[in-house]
Amino acid sequence: TSFTTLIAAREPCSATGQADNLARPTDAVWADIDGLRVIAAHPPPPINNEFTAERDAFIRAGISAATGAVPAIFVGDFNAAPWSPIADEIRRAGLRRAHCGGAIAPTWRSRHVLFGLAIDHVYVSPDLSVRSCSIGAAIGSDHWPLILEFVGPAPD
Image (cartoon, rainbow, N blue to C red; front, side, top):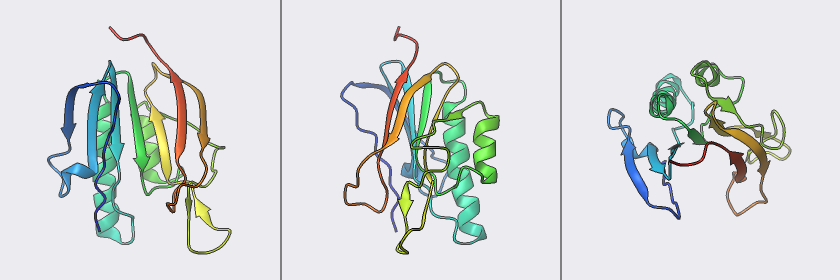
């Protein structure tokens, strides 16, 4: 299964990168766009200890890309609930989670009716304010899109 991540932007990117130290570097990518670093991740689901360790490594690569690069937005299908230990690591690194649709509103729906989890997240650096974050309408995926509006420092 491929979990490749893509960042698309209207503005040109001044720098880009990926987590070259990981097995699938394109699962954790970043781009500097008009003075904002956008980090996107889509690690594998934690179906066993090996995949959990791999997921956590991808998320840590995203934390690393966000640290020291402000302002920053870290977004993606983290395959981790907000109460998971790796989510605590993200918060300890100084990134704040935008509560899209509520604190634990599901963003992924399972094959089982009435079951879903909040595994898609947006985290922002301290210099950004979240004006709004909502869960969008179904678009044909088993995940609902996150729609974020934020305010930050003006670009240089």
